[in-house]
Image (cartoon, rainbow, N blue to C red; front, side, top):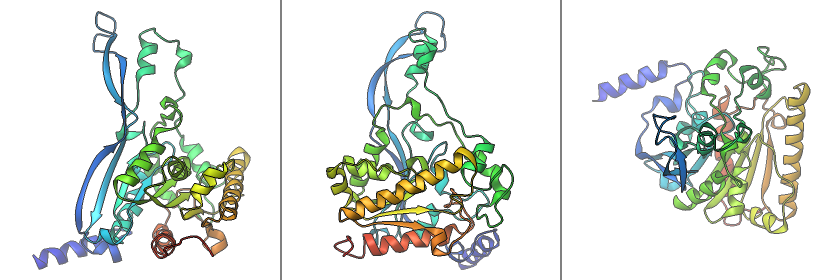
Amino acid sequence: MRTILWALAAVAAMIPGYGGEAAKPLVLASQGSFFVGGETKTSKQLNANTTGPGAGDSGDVTINQMYVQYQTPVHGNQHTPVVMVHGCCLSSKTWETTPDGRMGWNEYFVRKNRSVYLADQSSRARSGFDATKINAVKLGAAPPSELPNVFMASHQTSWILFRFGPTFNTAFPDEQFPVQAADELYKQMIPDLNGFLPSPNPTWANMAALAVQVHGAVLMGHSESGFFPEEAAMINPAGVKGIVSIEMACTTTLSPQQLSTLSKIPILIMFGDHIGDIPGRFGTIWTTNFDTCNKFVQQVSDAGGDARMMYLPKMGIKGNSHMLMQDKNNLQLADLILGWIDDRVEGKKDVRRK
């Protein structure tokens, strides 16, 4: 058995991007999956005979549920669990193995004794979506104009919007994203079906419920879901022990009650590099997002809360893209977040700055 373990470790060490932590066996106490939330509605259904009798039969369907997969390390009870939620046009694959085959944050956090819960947003990937509107148009019960938009991120849009470089297939000289593996990232892109969701987005309540279900968690969002942890906390803060928001638009029109709620939860916001180096409307998006998030941090701080902006270039960490959990220095950035959790979420009874 010892010989087999040594052989496995040697093979792991030979895999590009693996070594150190990854060369050690990954030991879990448990792993599995489940759903959070969901509701039942009656919907007109299309069957195989879409033009004959029975084409518009009614039936009950479950919608707006959120799929969650988890891994719990042997010593996971020593730390607060972490919930990771992906952004637009993506799934929880975001947090798994990087496009160029290195260790992702999911595995790394587990190796650092954190239980990790990966969620697919409601209406995305394994969480499914409500096809009622599509069926209604197909059956002639609704006009095509009622079909919501389904956004798909193109390679060209992703390259520039994700700040790999100023123009498609041209990378910044210090770019940290492994651009040689961009094609593997494009394979992760899936249609964004948020147009099928009601308002408010059920993912927010599902995240809050998940935090309660696991007896307290740090909620982490990215991009489209970057502000979801805050939205979840404003719905039900009971299980939200900390918030990590990465590269997103922030809301600054918060009520005194909302600010009071958020001021009781430690909040970390992280942005990468080249915020002002993208031309055109995408560049405007990033400068606006960054500015509003700085204002949000100030608002929470002024309300007595513990909110921090971790702007990587200001810390001397250069070249990070929008997909910083997949960048070449992704584990260095993970350590920054883990250090913040250790200090601000788990290290003090009163997390507010004095």
